[in-house]
Image (cartoon, rainbow, N blue to C red; front, side, top):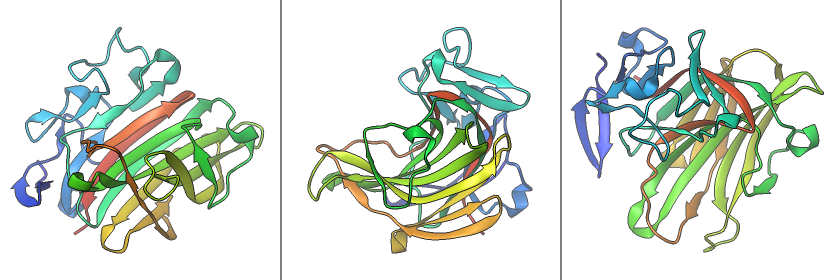
Length: 262
């Protein structure tokens, strides 16, 4: 059993936080303070974290994989999402104030997806309204200022381009479309093309909250640090979790780990 730190309302509690039934990809002695670690070789909604359910199906939190959720399956030791099955997201539990230095690590690929943006990769700085994406989706919400309804949201997309023969990684930030607005848009912080079309992509996203930056590593290569913005919503909400999902296609994920490096 790993031991880590759960951050609740500004208090630091030493408690076990790993999802049991799955495991981390690495030696637990070198994992630092682990918030959640799962290998998706079994139904993650049946695994536990700190005595509670580790993952929930959004809008169906009492449910597990099976006939009622045909878009979710474990195949060949990986979690397979099929958006045609109608399931949106898996959300991590417990809800957590992710501390400065939190690292979100995962291995994912797009098996198939609809064409996005006419198969032209976005560029850093591009803005997209709505939620137009196709491909994999790993999203994390953090840096909550609940009384003032401000918080940060970042996401990593992996998009498969059949016409080009590659996968494209996007690092994005969900932000206000204007100061004080509650209308949201999505800003591209980083784009990487040329990833092998059938390979799993190894991603590490580091939350550098003290400097309002995101550190990104792709397949073991440091891609730099990128400034992010907080967004404002009309009323407080509690989305302090990470979410994984497909968008307009089939996605796979091998493992996900949240923790603070030693």
